[in-house]
Length: 176
Image 1 (tube, helix red, strand yellow):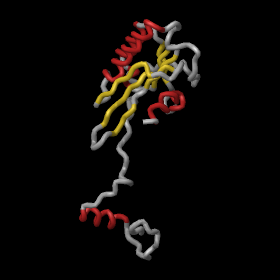
Image 2 (cartoon, helix red, strand yellow):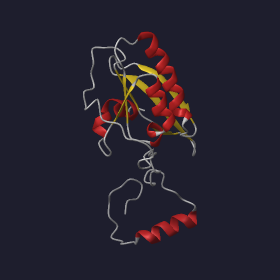
Image 3 (cartoon, one colour):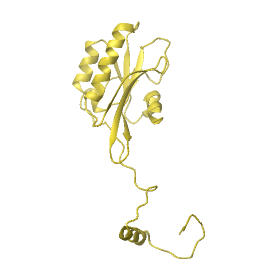
Image 4 (spheres, one colour):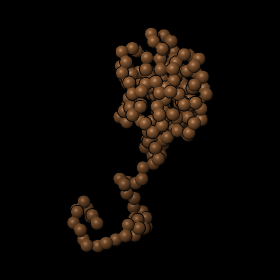
């Protein structure tokens, strides 16, 4: 038992359930050790076609807009509010080409920055672009896939449970 930060043991053995009950009766909560809320996971199984991994952990390129990566990250704000960020990053120079922030992880969260990115690609790309993502339902959605095909953009997806395949965007999202 620790009282006021001191590590001196008082020789009392108390069941953790009794401590929880007394804390509940006194209206006390422990903020530091509360269970973390479930992290956002956009994977819902195969809801569309899973694309081939074209990047294969080759995260650098000397050609602008040749390889771009994207991912959705959940941010927990004050209170219970959450925000979802979807950046699209160019691996040529680490520039965020487009992004979107929403309160809910809807399809628009990924489609709007994709359309912005495609406009930039049409105007500035000298080489065919590949966009790399995880296997979240947003990136398997028919509208996402169709938009990529219509604009001649390669789709690339990491394998399930291999976050190292998208380490470049995961690292950016961890820096939150």
